[in-house]
Image 1: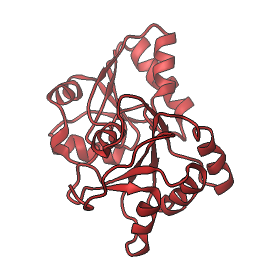
Image 2: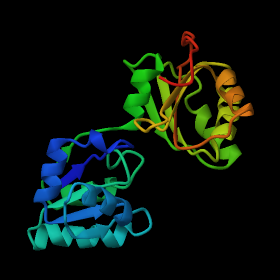
Image 3: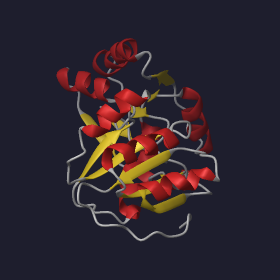
Length: 233
């Protein structure tokens, strides 16, 4: 059996009992970053062999993991650095290969930054489009954003602290000054949730430097403004 195990996006207290039981029961843990997973396993006194599985070794790692599952009859848990495997993280290729081989696959659900940010945003949550990380180069990023310019659905993006200002500049240029929300370091000590217009969110970085990972939620075409409030909830 291949288990996709969601892990905390910041606060280790968000690990589920089922996730811990699964990690203790499997034969091997496939990890996006064996060092980070090692810290998680050590914290919960779990001792398992790990196989590195990340964007730079996917083909080779998939072959090895399928061999362990199919030929050696092992059970394997796939974990990423944080959150749910396969959601802007490695996982899709391994799941596809397992399905093609007839290997059973299941999931141990848990935290996902995009859902938490959406729920806290104050924007419509009944219909949304998750777009993950946008391209790094400005031209490609604007083209990427323009695909959803006329969409009525709430839009969700991930962005790094190094490009969040440029992303907000491009989003403002493509979408106009729509209502939006900016989630930062969710579940961590300095978790912050800002709400307002895109221009207001961009202006907030005139006096502060971006830190940590960001989830950006933007209202769809025709979205109503959200109430601006304090930086922290």
